[in-house]
Amino acid sequence: IKEEELINDSDIIDIVAPTNYHFDIAKKVLRKSKHIFIEKPLANTMEEAREIVKLAKEANVKVQVGHVERFNPAFLAAVKYCSQPMFIEVHRLSQFNPRGTEVSVILDLMIHDIDIVLSLVKSPVKSISASGVAVMTETPDIANVRIEFNNGCVANLTSSRISMKKMRKMRLFQKDAYIGIDFLAKKTEIIKLKEDNDKDNFSFDLETADGKKKTIAIATPQIKDDNAILKELQAFVNAIEKNKNTPVSEIDGFLAMEVAHAILSKISPNTVQSIS
Image (cartoon, rainbow, N blue to C red; front, side, top):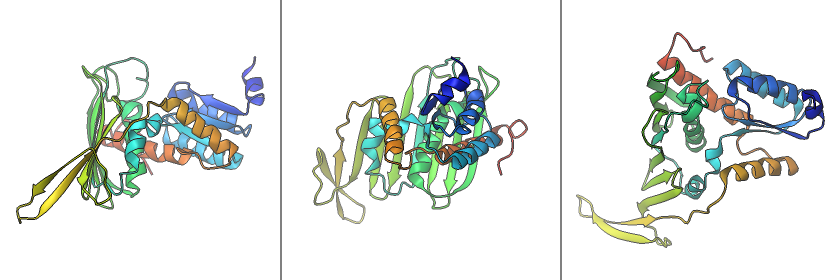
């Protein structure tokens, strides 16, 4: 079957090709006014990402970007506890795999955490500092990034694809609470000041320097053993059927890419296109 016939005969197209092919495929599909699910990152360059956003608006179709960690059951269990995080620390470490190395570790791995942080903080980025090293490939394979937001929140992100072990952990600190998320083990831990209506697994008292007593509650929410990929696809279909916004739209994908490319420009200012 020819590509054009396949597009014409489909209602929804799932784009799972390598990143450098995303734009060409998406352009053909959107010009046919078909809904698309597109794996992260949204595109290879910011220019391509902008054009996809423009074409999606013109076609008036649903677009969802495959930031699958938004559907990780450990993250879903933690979201309701996240009110206004002011410090976030993330470690995403992976063993080397040639697959996906056509892009840097920022666009390969860290972009998951960039998307999640942006979804939680909901404040404009004030400044970015970053360092990274290309070890196995021609682009950064390990990177450390500090993102400061206008509301005062600070996020420190570390990503590596040359580690000896896997790790996908996020720690969030906000007023009166600490939230720990293990995306790999699918575990969530909440440590916070106890409220009257709390029914937590465990609590204990602490006395502050001024003699005040604080009751600390520790909760470990029950995690459903859900398939994150299935859940994100179900959410996409649901958005189409009910004409709702997709949970991770092309705008979300664009914003995550914008921050990722700004990070890359800090690491390799001579090889990355400038971000407007």
